Image 1 (cartoon, rainbow over the protein chains, first blue to last red):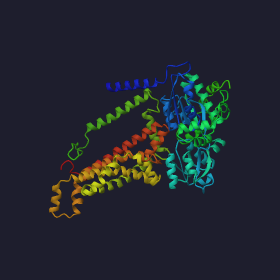
Image 2 (cartoon, rainbow over the protein chains, first blue to last red):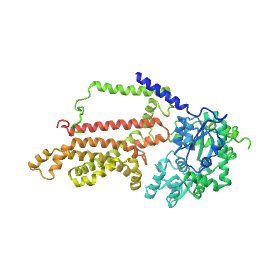
Image 3 (tube, one colour):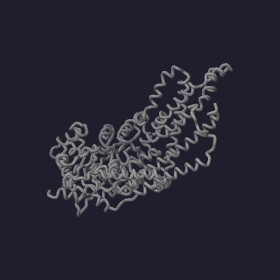
Length: 342
Length: 267
């Protein structure tokens, strides 16, 4: 048994040292030596902040580490292991993160964007209403915000999931299957969405669904421990995000150029994709429809709650948490503090 | 391969190895339970054995992603069976040709090695474009994965058939077509079956890759779906089921081997 104990001791030591590597020594009061950010290639303000190096300038004593992620699920995993401090994930993975069994200790300080025309359900031209989807084959990447939106469309039309053949495909495979005629439609995002639109018809967009209360969004998540330990850094981070949203509104060309550089797109195309998203500035984030204030948490918590109900029906979470869990998940205090003067 | 030392499979497993194996499994389970209990890592990383057991019960009764565990496994096994059936048949035919006809060897030998070294995920997207998203691309992928090992094993075995056997058969009046089927094939059979075992193993590892595209139902699709939702207990369950069913299939192939080639190791 001795070697086994030794091995156990070794893994314990490794685990402890891994946990302790998260920027302990503060460079200045309230700011860490290192800020680890998990970002995704989505044309919103986060990429403007990254491109313009605003965080690096505003936090000179802090080393900013940007790591690219491909999905919210991976961001969740990184958050659980404490490998990143602030990350970007869709509302669906964040709902999972805040529910059992994950119960990730993180909060939402900012909504990067509300998904608008960049995600939509495209179908063959002969399908003109959602009810006609019965018996058809529709593709979507499972566990994504698109998946959630597709099932919301079906529910609105009074169709059960089993009335439609829903297949799990990644966007490039969706394009291949569409061209081959294997699928009758897909709920997917750009740029594959644009390819499908060429010979299909848009039945519904996420912007329309958001208007009817089925809102999907790309969210920022911050480790609760980090927010508690380094409130100053979080304030600075929030102000840079607000600055990016304002830049997108006042100088669209500059914002599009910044995003284009990050995504290897022409400024025109980057500008078009940016325009498909709904960006919210600090004042709007604090409004009753979104994150709200410490006194009155915003309606966004209800949105996450209904997303949890959906995930429960999919057996992807063990139980639907109370609404208060999601209200506490909104970092309204930090948001209010960051923009107290404005 | 032929003369490599090999434990005698005809002797039944005696009591001691059986206990040893059971003991090893128990020690592993205990270590797992211990690591999970001390919570070095959150349960999402190391779920307890009991959690995996609960998932086994849940997926077997309620199902996961709309299908029960047995349905997932059966669909995958069907894919493996079909893919291997085509792959093994094609592999034996190709291997015979490569082994017997020098021109074919020159032409196709490198191609088989080329296909064999390709990772399946590299060409899966091509198969999706060519064959769509239903069963065809998956069967094709498994075929392409299982064919080369059988072809290589068969070709090597055919080339290794003792010259004396061929001469003896010919001098006893065997016709041109009788030699490959009645002399070459039987004497190459032990290696071919080893090739088949390797091929089934390769197909088994490939089925998870094949099921990354529209893989539900399917055990690989189930694992992939669970992984995306950080449901580690379901992932571990899927891996254990894949491993155990793989062991079972290999055991069946070994039994087949003993039935078909009772002379193995005595030639």
